[in-house]
Amino acid sequence: MSIYGAINAATTGLDAQSKALENISGNVANSSTTGYKRLDTSFSDLVSSTGSRQAEQVSGTVIATSRATNYLSGDVTSADRNTYMAINGPGYFLVTNRDGLNQETPESYYTRAGDFELDTERNLVNSAGYFLQGYPINPATGAVSDRAVPIQVSDAPMPAQPSTQINYQANLPSKPTTANYQKADGAANSQYVDLSVFSDPDEQSTLALNDDGAPATLLTAESKLLPSNQFEADSVLTLKVGQHDPEVLDIDANTTVQDLLDKLNGMHGVTAQINALGEIEISSFETLTIDQAGSVPSSGSVLDMDFAPQPLPSTGTYNPDVVTGDKADDFIKSSVAGGQETVYDENGTPVNVELRWALNAENKWSLFYNTNTNASGDEVAWKKVSDMSFDAAGRLTSPASGLVDIPDLEVNGVGMGDITFKFGLDDLTQYEDVIGGASNIGTSQDGFPSGKLQDVSIDAEGNVIGKYSNDKSQKLFKIPVATFAAEQELQRVDGAAFSETSTSGEPDFRNGGTIRAKALESSNADIAKEFSKLIITQQAYSANSKVLSTANQMLDSVLNIVR
Image (cartoon, rainbow, N blue to C red; front, side, top):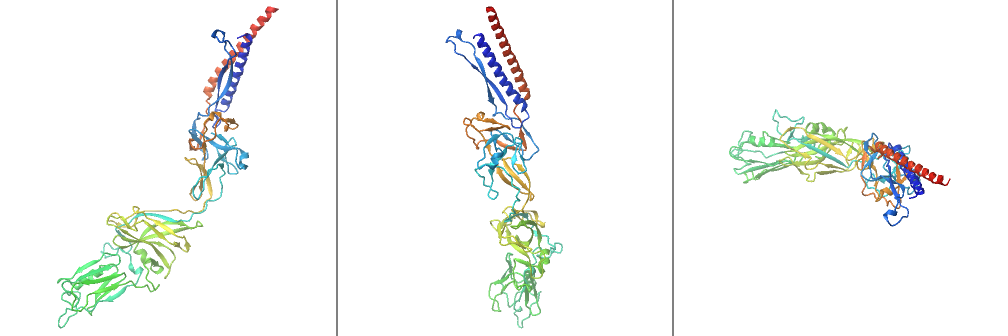
């Protein structure tokens, strides 16, 4: 290489080191810039035309090129803003500039700077002025759009959602301790619901019972039933009341009238006594059947009696599915509290649904809800939700599905529409032989009132979440993460952002990293390393300057020979 070649090489060396210094200075200046990607410098030699033999070859000049470090992530640190975010792994946030807010297809840019905040127009914009884009989410269906738009969070209130289902769980006792329950006195059937709440009794009498003698003597409570005009030695009575299991009384030589009376009086809602005419007067608030089997007695007919609940005077009807206002206190005294739940109509009006459990027979319950808290007279106060049955192990057997539909549920005149009660076969139980009230009561429902937007945040799945005054949250947008086949070929633009080029490839939104909420990615420029490179660059620049000055001196010496 000639002296002129040396001067040219030193000059290119100075230019290359100047470019390296420019990159270093830019890296140092942006060491605190969120999402900044430093530029390193690569050096390549340029060889001039030389001979084909090694002895004829000379070293060439140098050229400096910038090398992107987009693939290197900066440190991710926690932040105190709900809308700040960072990307764990590869990828970029999809953003646009202010002009893109008014464009049908916004111009796209890409950045790792996730310091987004809501501006006055409720757009998510970072400190560099880039507006975040995302996929709108349909609030009704949860469907995510496939077209990205600038994210603008609407401050419209969340509409009310009417309740359609009440989820219920509880464990019921084997014997409820109602106000009527008389454990100490041993009162029979005091754990059951008071049947006078639903009906008046049906009252009937048997024919006059006598000893079938000559002359015949009327039977009294202490009399034996054999011999008599109504029973034979093989007579068997089967008695069934309401939902209770049938009871059987075998008539033998020792069976007295009192035994029969005790059997009847021990049944729920049934009373019996023998009058002076030898007739057994029977009164029943519930369906009661008495069937006699065996030989036909001397009276000529077996005992076959059917009792039916009689209408209440206040209503003129018998309806075991409702409790009227004048019977509400008696109902409350013979049932136990079942909890309460607030439900909402289509306008978001809250309505409190109060529940009570009434035991009809062993392992057989009815659930009621309070439809009118101020009911009086024949106005309906409580309505039945459903009858429930349990097996001996305390598992719900009916309804088998664990679901009950209530058409047109209404409380204090507010119609709630059709409501489904979901009990679940494992959520409603009658475990353990205990005496008490309903326990482990838990209720929930799917309705809510309208709510005003109070806060916006980002979740771990990269969704923009709106939080409302009704304690509900709603997914508003899905934030995409873009990757490129050759991200080092992206074109750098102002604000720690990049734009797509023909050599970078098109953005791929399928394989990006995950989004970390309330976090920011720092610059990947390390000041200590940049200072180390600065020292090396300074030394190389000084060395090239020395080569240039030396070559100049040698050229002067040649010129001085001529002089």
